[in-house]
Length: 463
Image 1 (cartoon, rainbow, N blue to C red):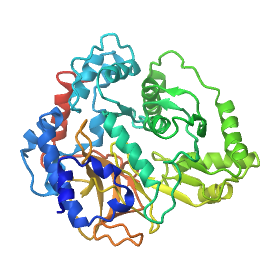
Image 2: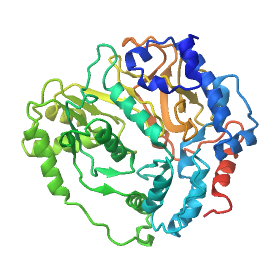
Image 3: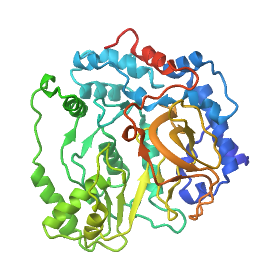
Image 4: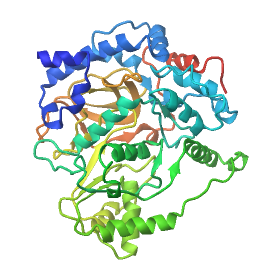
């Protein structure tokens, strides 16, 4: 390993600012060695700081690992971040929620006074006001929202990576987003909140459009507080089990003027942006209805030729399906070249679909494949399909080892036609929850190890 790479073992953060062209020209053999040595260092540093990790390591008997694959039993399943007791939310026991979250982060939360908190939003406000924690929440499609204990540095890593990925590798198109020279559009229903997308908008406002806020156009103007996310998830769960009438609802929440927002957004996008260079970020679940509404109104995109459309989610959103001709509908209204990315809330690195039709995950994120039934690691050779597990080298607020709900295919031999070195991910990502009814993740070393780790975070309090 080169001396400059060896220095990254103690502090991998410079990888985040290196730029795609330099980053993906590093030999894969050097990256593998760096990943192993940095993973070992992170385990040594973070085991004393994160109670769940320490309990898990003790339970399965891992004090060190000499191969990266041997670390995967220490990775936390994505469901760990929603393993709190529902009754604690229903009963307003935010002290117990703090106890639960404390087990998942290196930040000390025990001294934060949450006795006056009367909602999830006020609880997270209290934690943010007194610690460097900047929690991000999921949309709760399973009935429970995830609370992910991201800190200030991790939020910045994600944004820098997003800007770099869409700056392009070598001769790939530069979106123009990093310089703030584009008009940014996102057909998202809210502008602020702790969901991953509003958190993304906040980062762009602060890091890119601070002096040009008028260049950011979000469809919704309101705020999605965590209690709204929680209520939405519980409603979906109750509806799915036919028990909607049993759910006790909080007082009615004020609704934004949705139609006015739609009219304004479409006017800004299709009329005021004619001839301008834009960056349109819209998963296909949002782009399809946007194209349909534009067609009803007789609009077709007339942007500058170097405009950038970022789509994604070809397999459907959260188990949903698209019309058979969805691609034709989008291209009719937005006849531009499309880009796509693959990433997740829990990781600071993402991947842009390259010219060869593959995803290349940022090298500071070590990728693994697990058997979907046993969670045993698969060989990192040839072409393999399995459950994605990853280790993010950058975070210090939380443990970087994660087992996801995604089925992916990896070509470990590399050789992509785009020129990037190292392995790549095929563009056929699908959620296991879309393929099977029960997607419970188990530990390959001990079937009940994760349950025991959850018990530690909950203490004596359960549903």
